Figure 1 (cartoon, rainbow, N blue to C red):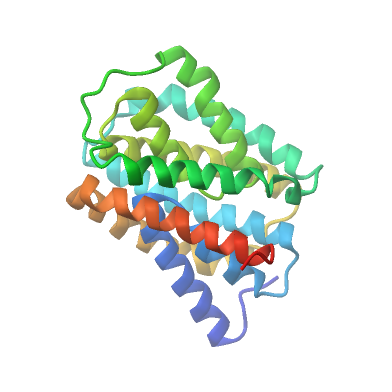
Figure 2 (figure 1 turned 135 degrees about the vertical axis):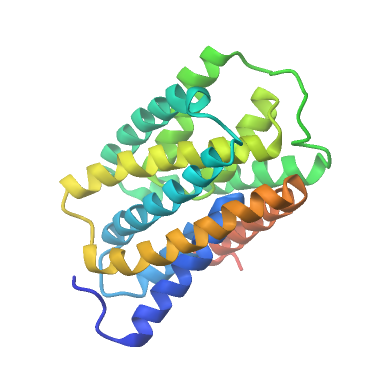
Length: 255
């Protein structure tokens, strides 16, 4: 599909991707905005998921570079985690092409409820300085690939899940966990994008419009996260998780 011919379509995709990039850089969950926008276009659902990974890859790359340049995390700290997320996401994306993604409908609400309740009921979560609950090896070989697998296969809430795992399992500050999550999100998006490109599912014209908006929003969102810290990130994660829960309930006729 070429770049949308109608200005209203271009405006919708650009606005949606800009807002999604901003929110995704802070709390994750940008797909809550971009996927519905893509589904309004005359493309198949699997193509919408693939194109969403395309524009999301550029947004998470922009947010990751901003966090790295500001020194919130370093390349040495995240390089092995990057590989772990990459491998997990690759497997998830491959399986997505083979199964019905509807099979994940029961898992997604559980993930979102868990993340929202954790941050909502733990008001000092993410202040940092807490001892890790799991070792580096377990986190790298099991936790990160597992979340990457979920991200590659489907993805809603994976950014918040990466952040929550960094805080709860590794005792990181919320800002550092969020910065790490952006890098791991980029790895997961990149891996699944390659799979979708090889499967000829990406709609490049639509993606170009959204890449520009997402990169702009991601840059601004990353700077806002650095400036606002946990006071901004924590409520954003809770709100995004609750918003995604409402969306899933609506999609399944529960509200």
